[in-house]
Length: 276
Ligand code: KIV
Image (cartoon, rainbow, N blue to C red; front, side, top):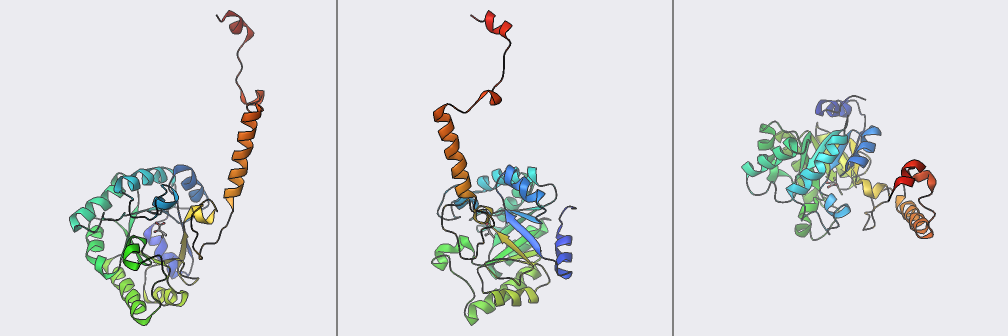
C-alpha cells in the first residue's frame, strides 16, 4: 500500500471506492490500524472520553492532542494522520487557529487537521489552508457544541436544518476542505450531501451512502465501558476477553504459578556461590 494523500482520497471518490477511517490515540493501536491498511487515522478529541475519562470532548487541550498525535504519527507508515483541533483552539482568533493547526502538524506530526462547524468556520478553514495545512471539516452532530445542542442528538431532521447542512458542506468545500465528516445525520440526507460535493464525505452515524466511514476504535473493538451510540457496530468484543486475561494473571500471581522458570533469567552456580 502506498502513502495515503489528499489526491488519493479524491481519486477514490471519483472511482467510487470507499474510504476507511478509524480513530487511534496511541502507538500500539495506531500501528495495527496502519497495518490493516486503513486509509486515515483520526486522533480524535474523543480521546477525552475513551482515553482520559471525561464526560465530553470539551476539556481536551492542545497539549493532550499534540501528545497523542505524536504517538500515532510515529506508528503510521502509510495511513494519513488527521488530528482534531480541540475546543477553543480555533474559536478565539484566526491567528491562534493557524498557530494551533500548525502545532499539530509541526510538533504532532499530523498530515491534516479536523475542525467542527459549518459556514461560521469558513474563514478559519481558509486561513489554515493558506498556511498549507489540509483541513477536514466536521458537520452534523459536532460534539464540541453539545451544550448548544442540548445533548448528543441526530442533526438535520427538519427542512431548515437539513438545508443548512447542505449549505454548510458546500461552503466548506468552497473554502478548501478536502474531506467532510458527517456525524449523526439521516442516511438519505448524507447521500444528498455526498452527491452535492466533489470532496469525499466520511460518515459516522450517517448511513451507507457516504464516500467513507469512521468509527471510534475503542467502541468498534468493544473496549469502551461508557455509552455506545446506536450507530456503532462492535467488530470485536475485547472487554470480556481482556478482563478474563487480567483475572487469570491475578490468580496466577496470587497462586505463585506466574512467573514459572520459563519466564525467569538464570545465573551460574559459580557466581551464586560467591555471593555474600
Ligand atoms: O473525535 C472523534 O473521534 C471524532 C469522530 C467521532 C469523527 O471527531
